[in-house]
Length: 630
Image 1 (cartoon, rainbow, N blue to C red):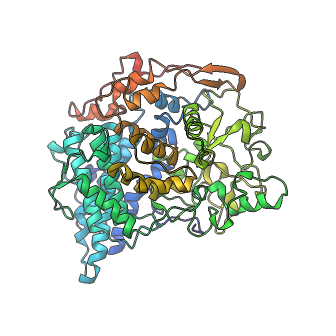
Image 2: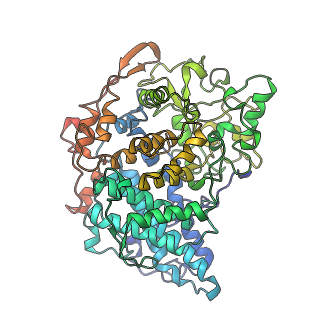
Image 3: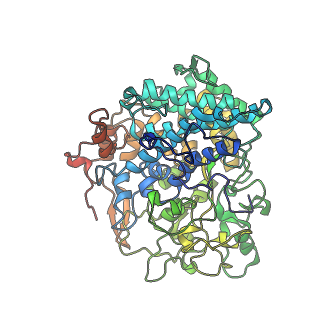
């Protein structure tokens, strides 16, 4: 782990560069920065890249229910409920696949297009710099990063909203303003950008520093291709090798006419043979609750002791070399830094963008007057907002798998807090609803006996910490990387694509579960257990469903299984209710929408007929609209 709390990629505010072409309509003054004179030197290109990457910080920080799409995809899956308090209606609307307003999902739409515009500008202007011959590798690396980032921003955008305008130039033509077909136009561009990134980038950068590299691009090529093949081409089982090739767009770094499944597999095998990544020995090493300060408290038998990590090797603790932030299996991540503040002003709440706000949203509410964050009730976990709590389904399904196969999976208790058994003094808030009895452990806020106050987090005890810029430590002290690609994903994708179980078996061995032969069901389960609460579940469900779902398809069936589960409401454990859908059923809402969200009405209006609303989001239909349940 890095002993400092600063990210090299988050140092620039998200507003450094504008995505608006209208601002270029007037004649520039000599002192203005324009594409004609910028970038003029290598440092300018690095600054452009920082602005491109910062979009991820803006989504990862700030209000999770407004703009954190990785959080959204967990809430929309069968891994989480909406929950929270009675007033926390945005998260509930996400979980029930309905909307509170016609522009509820607008922030990621704007943010991702902003990132796309920044990346496109960097691609077009990179040769404004007078590169020397010996700088050609650096030039290609920086250009490859810009292509890569544009590719993943378009991937996320179209996974959220489906058919959207495909803008690949800073000069937007009338054709680019039209809605493009995701299957035949956007995904070919996504894969082409990722291929350009893989071919242009080297392997030196990108190891724990927040940058992409060749291996990162190869991993995301697989993720994007698998979604395209599963969702759009309805390939139910990729190990059969029946997925078609996808046509590519010719551009710098991408000269092949198409990308095949065999090409994707070759890229993943390149990561395995040459990437130097490896699984951490202990799954718990990935998460901040395994930090050495908490481990030390568990050993000395003074005060509290967190028994769950007591048996770990100290060298495997989160803040030890090769573990935690920048660990050996981390390919790509959103990084955060010690510069956040509690502020809800400004565009996209940029004051919070340096903090991993998902920790706040998933944190424990802990009822009883003035008891929030009291370490006697929640040690070693700190207070939060208690939204998006894990569903009964993930705990029950995981427990059934353990019972059926006669094993104990370390990852279950390493990923979830079992409130009744781990935090016996925990009480619910009086307005809590959709409580399952579980909480997210992976990104949970962590406290220490050694902390100065109940709402301090363990980060305040780290070398290099400074609270000078923070005015609310509970809200701002969250610096755990949010993983976007781990090596275990590379291994599981390889098994799913090839049917070779040896890759999956490595992941199983690390978890202490029996090694199994290949089956699609085994891969599906392993992905759910390994990546619970990391933002992958919903789109995995979608690609295993295809784009012609019915009630027996994977996603509708799994989502509908939430109905009838017992939940706790209004803070009273004896007040058990059964989970039910807000307007109709989860299966129907999924089938009606195919898992896409509503496009912002403001964007549809301004495009004047060029952008069409997604199916299943007719605002006049009561089934699409938020309804108070509690």
